Structures are given as C-alpha cells and as structure tokens.
Image (cartoon, rainbow over all chains, first blue to last red; front, side, top):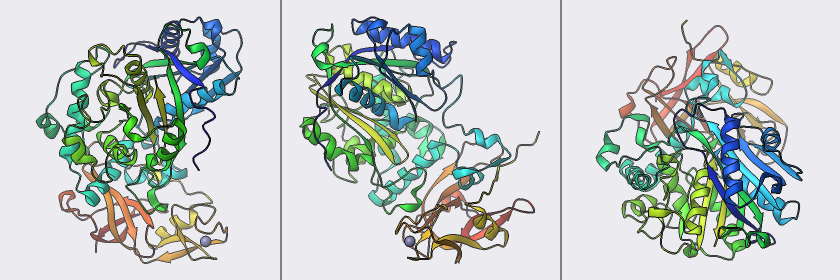
Length: 388
Length: 133
Ligand SMILES: [Zn+2]
C-alpha cells in the first residue's frame, strides 16, 4: 500500500537549534531541551507564543513535553506528543509534527530531543544487568549476556558478512568517511581524522564491531520547528519541505529475529517504495542521505534497502567512495551519530535541513534539492524525504 | 559485593520453558492447530493466530545462524564470550538466543552444528547453552 500524497509538502522545517554537544553538559535535560528549543524557534524567526504544538521522544531520559511547554511559556497548544521510543523515532517525531500541521491542527510545532547520554543515563547500558533477576523479554537475553544494541546489531552485521561477504574493512570505510566529514564540522565531538588502520587497531566491543564502529555517547539537545508550508515561505530561511514520511518495517529484528526468515532485509525495504512514491521522487533524485548510524554497518544495510545499491553490494559501495561528499550519494555529512554525536538521530535530520538551506558552510554539498533522513531501532524505522 | 549474572524470572507465559530446562529438556511452545513452534513464548501462534498452544520437547539440535564475540560487558560477565542465534532443527527460522560454550570464540563458525546443554544456576534454574555437537 503506497498511500496517497495528501501530506506532500504541506509542512516544512523552518528552524533548527542545537546546544553544544559534549561528554558532560553540566546541565539537566530540561535545561538542554529549552536551550535548543529556544534557539530553533528564534532561528525560524518566531517567538515561543507562536508555537502551538510540541513533540518529543525518548526512553525516560528526556525532558517532558508538558514541562518544556510550560517553561517556554507557550500560550496555547493543540498538540502535545511525548513519544516513548528510541532511534526509530527520530524521523517519526518530525512526521508526527508534520501530520499535526498538515491536518490544520497547528501552525508551528516544536520538535526536540534532549539527553545526557554520556554523563547521565547511558543508552544501551542495560540496567537489568545489575539486577538479581530479569523478567519479560529480557529473561531470554540478559542472562545470556546480550545486554546492548552493539551486540544485537553486531549479529545482523555478522549475518550480512556470512551471506554477502561484507567485511570489517567495509565498516572501516564508513567510519573513516564520516570522521572526515566531522573534521569539517565545528559542532562534532570527534574531529581528529582517522585511517583504516586506526579502525583496524581499535579494540573489539562486540566482534564484528570495534570501538570505531560505535556512535558517540553524547550530552546535548537539538530541536526544530515544523511549520505550515504557506507560512514557511515568509520566514527567514528557505523552508525544507516535508515531502513524505513513513514509519514501519518488518522482517529482521535486531532484538527478536526468532520469528523471521530473513535476517538481512531491513526496514527500508518495506517503507522506501511508498516513501518515494508519496514524495513523487525516485531514489536517483536523492542528493543526500542522512542515515541513522548508531553503528557503521547500519549505513551499509540501509544503502541497500533504500535502493542506493544492489542487495549485498553495500560493502563494496562504501569502499568505492560512493558515500563521501564527492560520491554518488553523500551520507553523514555532519559526521553522523558516529562522529558528530548521538542526539538519538535527530541531529542527522538537522544536518539534512542545513544542507537543503545551503548554510552548511565548508561542508555544503553542491545543489541539494532532495534529502533523505532515517531512524532505526530493532526491526522498524522511520524516514523523511525533505525537499527544497 | 559479588556481582552475579541476573537470573531469568519466569512468568505465566514462560514458566514451561524454564521448567523444561530444570528437567534438562528444551521445551518450546507449539501450536496445536498448525504445529508451528513459537519462541520466544507468545500468547498467539504467528502462523495461524491460534491460541491453543502447548509445551513440546524439541531435540536441542541446531546450527549457528549468527553471533557476536562480546569483549566488553559488566563484571558479572566473563569476557570474551559468544552470544548468538541458534537455528533449531525442528523448523526453518526457529531460533533461540544463547551462548556457545566449549569452543574457543575464534573457532566459532557459521552453520556449525550445536547441541543444547544446561548450566545449573541454582536449585530452580538451568540455563540452556549450546556446545559443538
Ligand atoms: Zn498455528
């Protein structure tokens, strides 16, 4: 089912804001959320009283929508959504805001994600591992020492290596490419260039993943404003139109692959055809892919299933330089979650906006008309097509 | 304080599995209507939506589908260790997450034949692990 294109270009991202990204913010998550939010609202040429909806997501580690709205002094709201979810929700949160706008509920919706991912509650650090007994689904994972996403995604990567001959050196090409991008990004946490040898010599975390295959635990927040397109034209920056969105998937689950046949087909294979059709584009129209990259391999898997290369060819594709700024489909021009920082994926959406606006400074790609952004968790993910 | 690996906490949905392990048998939910095995335990058969499910012993034979060698984990876990998905002989795609033991991590291979074994954790709980067959 491809759906109708009722929402195509009805909403646009009009403002973006960040806090500094660090390993120890020294601030609470609400202070971070407020700082990024105010910055995004002002970037859109608006004031808090103009915002009439707020959306955020987190896993119990973020600032609550209602308290952020109150602290900002919002005057009226038609749409508050505090979504409980992780990496797969980064684009879903923007889609949720875009739907509220497209349906006429709101004029300007604020979207933010704030976390102290390094100094506070660290993601993927199973608190259950410190408990005496674990129930629920974790009774089948924690006692066996499967504790964190690095292990579950590592198993997807391993199976891809078995089925298609993908290598850890292919992962290294992803790490090196995104780090090189981060070197040109003043916001990035990791700005020292690395080589394939650095990657090869970094220690194993969960083999086949090494330290340099993993994203950066980060303290920080980012925010954006989603506005009605007809209003967006009168705001200071060129709008990044939300051309289509999707959230879904099936098939391989990083967490529970026991009921699926195919371990190496990922969520984009299920959502990409409809996503592109609703936006009225083909994969070849995409100029930038801001793919969710908690681990290097995730980029390889998504390149295949979003259709940038053939299934199984993702490894050779990245080794051939195709995801560098000069390649056929630049990925992670900000350095991604791997090297800019891990604001749970939302920072990659902001980079796509920046590239569409043309204000990415020394990182600016030539003529970005259409950008793809994605978020991924377990067997589902969300994605956005943004257009100038 | 000695840190120990957390124990599984059986519930109404999963008790039959852990009781089987206590008897040194691998028992999985099986659909009485279509014969599909279901793991992890769920209230409904994903093949035919039947809710008539009962515990049934499986052979404990399988092959390694995918795995990681964990080098970084909390102190309760002795690294390096192998955790992976084992595809059981009874049904294509019927997989169980467990540890591969009795084999150096570097010798672990895709498709290697494995058989279930049980590690005694306490009087009530045995953990099902897999050894080279
Ligand atoms: Zn059935």
